[in-house]
Length: 77
Image (cartoon, rainbow, N blue to C red):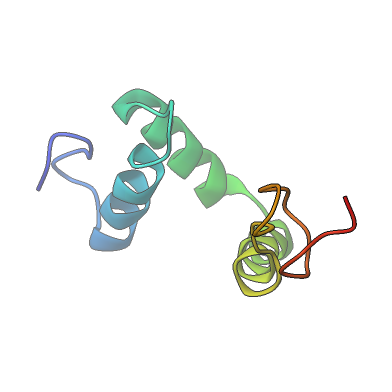
């Protein structure tokens, strides 16, 4: 197991800590805090967060002209 997770962490917990620690500005301790917050979060809120992440990845692109973040390849700007 890597240094970002706790030695006794269950595999799903360790994977989430690792995923959070890859985000810019999130160190190992912050990744652990976010993970433990998510564990206590109501399932509905966790699902809403997961759906928001997937929606952004599926629907949002960088504008090829100005690098804005619209839903269409070229924004109105």
